[in-house]
Length: 404
Ligand code: IFM
Image (cartoon, rainbow, N blue to C red; front, side, top):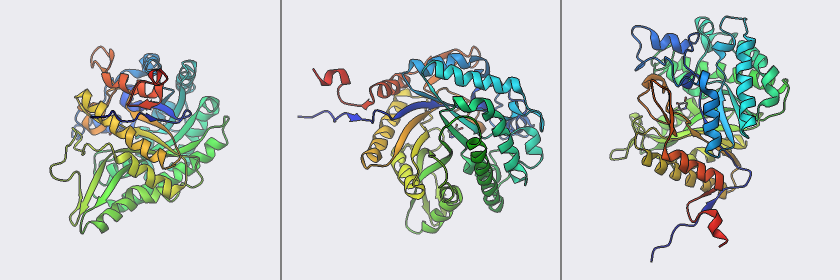
């Protein structure tokens, strides 16, 4: 006789949310370095971001969607190039726009999780050298202070810089992000160091701002596995992508873990999946169990509380997304049961959106967006995820039946 699996119950104060980023959803971010990068003649980006999901105008509809799913939190980012479109010229109107989003979230019972840098920088900042410029940390912290002056009291959780390791690696190692440089690993390392300094200065700026909220950065992590002879390559990659950050975050309040898959290393270096494994349209192995390995490592190295600030899958088959989320949440539950201090989980992403070098060809959203009318349509995975969040229970009988 088959038995149904025990329901997995999550802690009552566990935070459930979903995440987006300004450039991926707002549209029309003409003053950012990414706009320049994606619109230049020889751009390697599949298509320009254009109107994106028009969320700059439709943010209230987006918040309504998050609330109607039964989630408690919305993670979004502030577009620096809107706040400071020219060096030293700050826009009060744009700051107020983001303040209204924070207030709109709170009015709907959603805690605003605010990211200050999610891959895009103002054009003027990129022209000065971006995160290779010696004044970059100070300039970034100055913008953060300006924003936090009014947003501080509304912020529930602050993420200074999203995936700084990806900014450095994709910009100077892989060439898929601005400034599009390939194989310059010395520069990857030095940009990592400047981003870390920018993070530290932003933490200080936020601690001096009004409001009291936990502050951390969000790191792109993967389960990293060395096959025979691949130990050195794995360790080098781990140092450049993860450890150089994880070692330096002890003074933060939390660390955001963002994970999607696992990578294998052999004597030839990194390989995206092992032969015969199931892969996703991103070219990643379908591996939701990456959550536990990354969370464990981040907790062991930093000693900080963890928030899974991004996890999800790109797929056009929504049943596959449900399967992935189910697997990821089971993986998360295993670390919670071990006693690791995980405070929340944010599914990437609320909407199908602009996936950087891939343009609109990837589908990470719980909600699809019509590319010409911008009509939003929740997918079955939105119901699935929302019902886990509402009941704080995965699998087994629905909670109301437990007592009957
Ligand atoms: O879309 C990105 C996001 O901007 C940063 N983390 C990974 C996601 C999926 O690739």
